[in-house]
Length: 133
Image 1: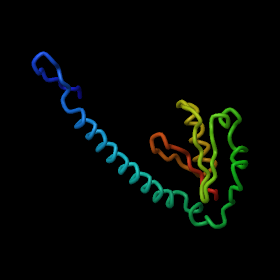
Image 2: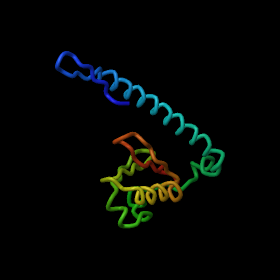
Image 3: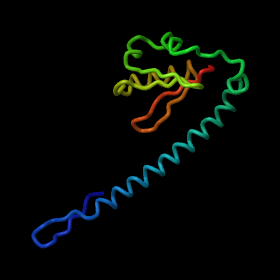
């Protein structure tokens, strides 16, 4: 979709950029709703795919802290990541753009080794690892 220009005498004026921005905002809101729904469906499906993980949550080993994660990631990836402890999760945020190869490596480690997930929230996107794995 291009910007339509209207000839007003000798001046060209752009038509309602505000309307275009409103449509983009509306689409962003709809995409967020879809993303939230997909995350919820994914969590529900994981209960069926990984029943021992959900049922044994109280008996699962607990990550003591960020130091436990440092043992799982290779040094080259550790240098690209920031870690933050929360009550139930450890949050992993990239310090910079990871690129597709490093992103795939981190995502694989988070999913397969740590039973975590990627949370897509624009600039606030991060990996989230449960304290109990």
